[in-house]
Length: 151
Image 1: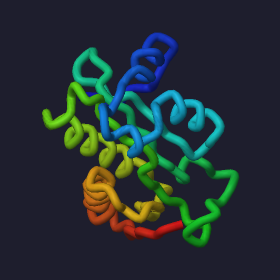
Image 2: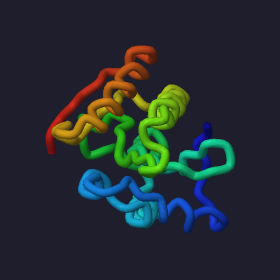
Image 3: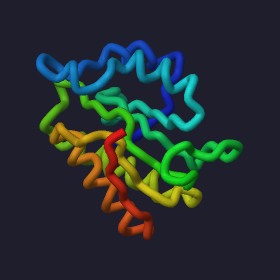
Image 4: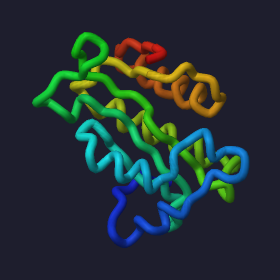
């Protein structure tokens, strides 16, 4: 399991990943997320791979990588927040999501400038709640504060 930068060689495969029927309204299509990320300096995004197969997509709002501008939220403190997360319907319920979240936690721990793990969602869906809970573990291990706010 790995998180890999998306390249010209795999962007089409990553854009074709699909959460499946009934889940489309829970997350934006990967093509939209990738386009948005290219115009958002705080976006850190990766394809989720199982061996050589792309199986998902993750994007984090990482204000620790934008040092020339203070974040508008959280009193200007640098923070990390989940933005997008999806596992293709063919690979759901096989443990890949949990493994990918552990990799995202490791990434969050590697960002020394980040002081908080936050969520800007009302957390209405269980998938996001699990994602936030996993990032909260990262925050506890790193002495970050965890905030959840509806904006």
